Image (cartoon, rainbow, N blue to C red; front, side, top):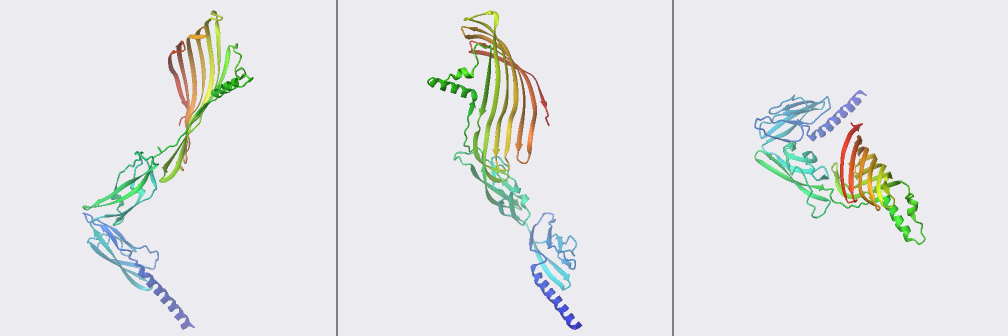
Length: 401
């Protein structure tokens, strides 16, 4: 039995060695390489292929070997235009030999330039890292220059949302220059289709009043919506709603082309007020006129203008102002035959406002709370000529980062 078992073991080892010998045709010395010859002859390059088998031993020979010649991968300094390096690999199957040729050249050629991103936005800078640059010898892409370095899309005579821009890549070395061209799309968000409008609820009220007057035997809405004119005080309410303007465009987000749109100018501002007029005793004549004292109080809020821009991962929402105000007014006027002749008014206004911005991937940023106090005065003659002055009394910002 022992001779038979020994025969099987010998056959297995022989088969393994034949298999390894067949695999050895894969050039374990690596592919032939090129390196640029430097003026001080300090050019270096790695040759060989990684090998994780601990039973293999290597022995390299050739000019100017800089590292351990018994490793599968070594660093060499090729001194001549053509340099041959020979390696012997020892294993359980015996020695194997391979060789690699390293050429030292005096020029570098630009082989190809391939964009790694789809597009740019108007005014973006062009970086070499945005392109796959192949040189011969390889690895010298850092020596390449590109022109232009900033891309623009400002010539909108054709009203197109994108414009192809040709880039020129150049590599100069050793008195030799090679160039390649690449075309990229540059987007400009100025290609716009927009629409917008605003509505005042007070105007809706007036429209309803006018409509009622046209209806035969219609109810006089004026009497319903307004107080008795004999009352010295008149309440008021208004709410201005600005509908958004819509803008469509093509844009570039993180190197990818996206169809975007912007909703801007959205705002809502409700206001309530109370105005009171009292005749000065002894200074008024019924039916003719006289002096009246005016007192007013108003309060309101403002949300907006709000702008939302969709550009894929570059979307953002901005509320330029979220605030509230309180206004106290006092003044005196002279009236003759139901016509205002001269009036003077003093306003004290306090406001509080904040801003907020949200961007995809960055979260919400608050602008703090700003409180303002101001005073304003005005004089009006015949409701035609008005002189106004105003002055801030103070401002303070709370919760600011």
